[in-house]
Each structure stands twice: as C-alpha cells, then as structure tokens.
Length: 432
Image (cartoon, rainbow, N blue to C red; front, side, top):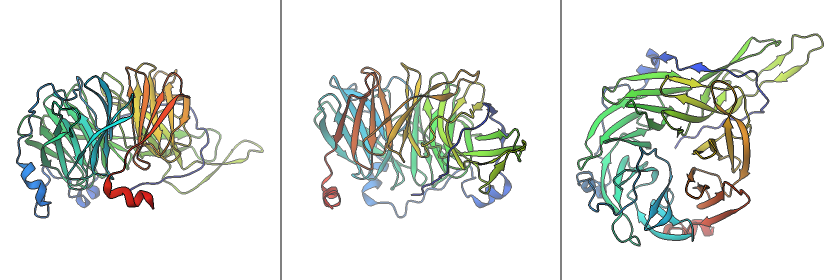
C-alpha cells in the first residue's frame, strides 16, 4: 500500500477563482512508462487463491427478493454505508483488518453477525436490488453479497469477479458497476446482472482512487496524486483528462504567481444533479521558497507547501471550481467525506488530526464549499463518514481504532462511541 504525506505551514491565500476543466492527454513519456495505457488490462490468474476460483464462476444475481437492504439511487463506494434492516438503522462496515463485513445497529449499539470475506475489503456499495458490492483489495476481486431473510445470520457471498490489481473504489449506475484499481491503473465496468460480465477495462494514469457516475453516463475518477481527474464515457470507453490545479496570484510580491497541483484526492462526494465535492490538498511542488514584498520596507513570508481545500466538480458544465479560501488548514489527510443535504454542508474527515470539518458554500458565484461552519473532534482517525438523514446524525468509522462514532448534527456535544468486537485472530495484536 502506498501512502502520500504532505506537510507545511499554512497561511491564508489570495483572491478566489475558478479553473475550467481543461482537456489534456497524457504525455508520451507517461504513456510509455505506464502499461495501463492499453485498451484492455490483462488479469493474471495463475497465482490466485484456490478458494476464490469457484466463486469467480458462480452466478451473481439475487436469491432473496426484498430481503436485504436497498438503495434507490446510484451508490458511491466507501468503507461505510447506512441502511435499514428489519426496521433498524444499521451501519455496514468494510473492516479490512478483520477481513469482514461488519454490521452495527446504531440505536442500541448491537453488533449483528459479521460476514467473513475472502480478502481485505476496501469499499462497499449497495445496489437497488439489495445486493452489496465489495472491493477486495489484496486478492484483486469484487465480491457480491446478499442478506437472507434471517437478519441475525451473516450475509451470503454470491460470487466474486477478478479485477485489475488493487481495487479501491466502486460506484453503481443503472445496470452496471464501475471499479477503480489503483495498482492496476484502470477502470473496470461490469454488468450488474446474474453474470456480472466484464464489459470494458479502461487504462488510466497512476493512482486512480474514487469514482462517481454522472446522469449523462460519464465516470469521473479522482487520482490520489498527480493533480488530475479522468472522465470516461461508459459507452465508448473514451477517456479525457482534466487538470486539478490552482494558480495563486502574488500581487506586490517578488514572484507573479504560484502554481499548485491537487493531491490527496481520495474521495468524491455527490451533492446532487451531477454536482460533486472533491477534498484534496493543493501542493506547491517547487522548492521551499520565501516570497518578499516589493513594497517599501516590505518583509518576507513563507509560502505554504500544502493547502487543503474542497474543489467542486460541475459535471454538467465540465468544470472544476477551486477557491483560494482555505478554512480547514490542518486537514492535510482528507481520507473521508460525506454530504449533509439538510444543511448543505460537506463534512470532511481529517485522518491526521482525528476531527471532522464542516464546510458551507461560499458567497461567490462558483458556490464552492470554502467557508468553515464548524469542526469537532472524533475518537480515532476517520477513514469513512456517512450521514443518517432520518436522524440527522453523523456516523464515522475509524479503521485504525476499530471504532464507530455517532454524532448528533443538531447537538454535536451528543455522541456515542462503539468499539467493535475484535476478530479472533486480532485479539493478540490488540492485547499487545
């Protein structure tokens, strides 16, 4: 697993602005170095675990109509999802350390039976027919599970399907499933019928991470590093590249401007009607520099290396809108995010400082979420967030601490913390 780390002193930036999603193709040197720039990605199966080969050929369709949770809208993958089971609000959790799909009833903190998985889950999404799709990062698979009529029984594994290496993100769309593979540098499209046939594999630049699908049939893929987005037409497989950058004008300084590129782009958040939020960290990739004022008796100022912010992706106009306001200055590792539709707030989980930051839309014409509404501490570093709209509460999952924190969004001082029961093979590690 590869992690990026950026650090630096944070200061306020200059005036707000927006950058259009300019079209660009990968440079020839990148294309030559990356084997993923092919129409199809070969999937080696010679070293696959034997226990997975049978499920690769098993049917994937639902067996228990109406028994499991269901989503009425296209679902975007994360390590946490909220649903209703037998009238109870339940958190579904992809626990990579335990290699299980965990279930926690939120109102009474009861753990429902966990479901062992044949690999480490990285993200899950719920389909409209109740099936649950899970990426298995270490065995290069997407798994399909289903709940039976007995809510106290573990989920049933229906099938698995091979993917390019290290699947990390997924999203459902009408009739299909999109999966990003980070090491495999690709986007894989599957049918969501009984066959789960692989329709297409599209090569991508390095570090593809989150994926969302627009109403117009376009997959938008964030890249954890490199300051880019990939846009893929689901019908043709055509890929276009968009830059995630920001130019800061430095009026009255010894340099005209500073160019930044967006990194740490781990999660895309649907805001409605092909509108998406993208937490990221804008990095000045040049040398550490001191900027001097050109005014008489002017002093000097250190330019921050890293500036965290939330960009807005307008899928209808093909634009990325980036503000120069930086309200969440400590949030240098935005690993999780979700949307509070009732208050129109983007909630960002800051893994490095164990807190959640709520951002409201600014008053500028681009309506980017760039104003701080509030921030609150969490128990453990957040790796996934979800809003329970019915009860207006935030649910945060920490893979590092195996904890679920539930925070009332109306009275943020009210919270409950649930430590999940460790899997048997994790007991010695936790005890140590």
